[in-house]
Image (cartoon, rainbow, N blue to C red; front, side, top):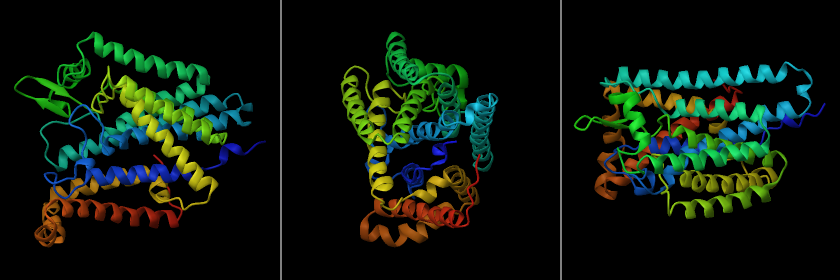
Length: 363
């Protein structure tokens, strides 16, 4: 029996880990009023480096599906007719656990930070939904049909938003769905107008599934060692995304189709580069410890932030440890970044310690 499916690509762990480290970096500045522009999301249209972080992670989720679930079906273990069904159950159960963890983190934020409204949508919830749908499609339809699904999701989403009024803030159809479903529980809610918006809302999860499917196809090429095709696809995706943006702007909040292609193009090129440098040329897999414990780092760091804020320690730690002595010398923005880097460094120590002991908890 072939054991190809058991191979673990260090490049994927490294890319996942660097993405998680970037998530922590952009989520934990010492002072939100003083952040370098590349470390902030675009207010509406446009794309900053920070806007690439979440789609990179969803893309890598798709890559992991191809290297894990799909490989287990294709390389001999599907001789047992119950195996695909058991994989499907395991996939759906893991997706449910990811969604449940996201909800628990939001319960913790609601309780510890004394927030007025509970937010049901979020990053882990979207990851869980995309993982479930992309995994099921990977198990049950062929590659060509997966490409057709990507095209249908992107074209359909474009047509839906164009037909229902466009992409203006608050009044676009995705935001109207958020308002109808969530009301004040949306991430953003204007009580004066009664309008809401959630960047991880239900409707914009549809093109996010396309991002994950793009990673699924790239993962299949990676398993075959076809770095050239990954790189070529990245260039094509960037060109198509830039062209499409003329009619359907790049927008992370709405996860527009042009944004899927633009961010996906960069993700494809990053994967190709990581594969060549780490897997083929033997460069160190920087970020691998974060990648092996991605969910632990993300969830644990979020709980740490909530706890520090709830205890009233966040501001004193930042002020005494960074702002008080750095601001007079360097201005207010550098200490804010230094705090975020220190936070990432602290969690690197945690996941590195776990990795050395072989601790890799799975959700």
